[in-house]
Image (cartoon, rainbow, N blue to C red; front, side, top):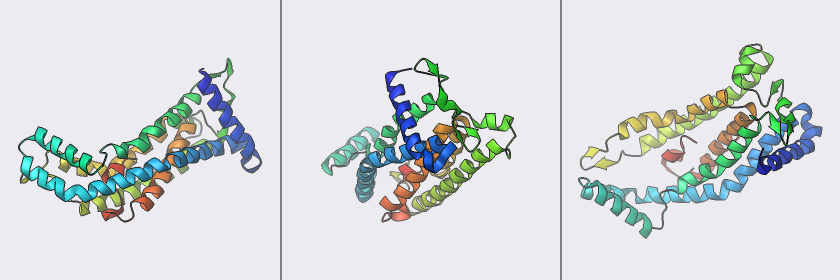
Length: 253
């Protein structure tokens, strides 16, 4: 295992030791939640910058609509004009992607750490740590094989699914509201091709997190659930003054 992975495993173990008096056998699970919160705090400045960018792009919507009318038959010229407008107003079209991109390394570290049987030339003791009775290195399929959906391990996953479904429903309602408040981009006098399908699929993207939680190790699932819940609350605050309260690009996060 790489030195980076060993250092990360030691960090998780130290955080679990600190939380042990409060959470006992689930201290490592609590450490993962705390680690996720720390990652989100570090990324928060990027999220705030992304919110400012989204609001700036929303203010530019009327000008972009005019550019679409003017260059609707010349996609290349339209793209150049939109990029030029973004540069003029100092708006980055990629700013909304940065918070998600910076979280990926943390997720993959957790995924690989709790998917590896060995750690530093020895067996990976972290795999035996639990949340309730469910091992952090296990998956939902393992829980189903040991007691089924309503078994002791299955109930742990069921609780996570309920949290994810509640957050996804919250995001779904907000995204539908945003779509209703935002007119579809036009290419000339007609809607941009493909936008109708996007507006139907976009509100459902948050529910894809349920699949992720079902197939990754429980430790990584905890990261996903904690991060997704944080995102929903953070966006509700940062985008509270936008029509519908959420940018379209945020719906899948």
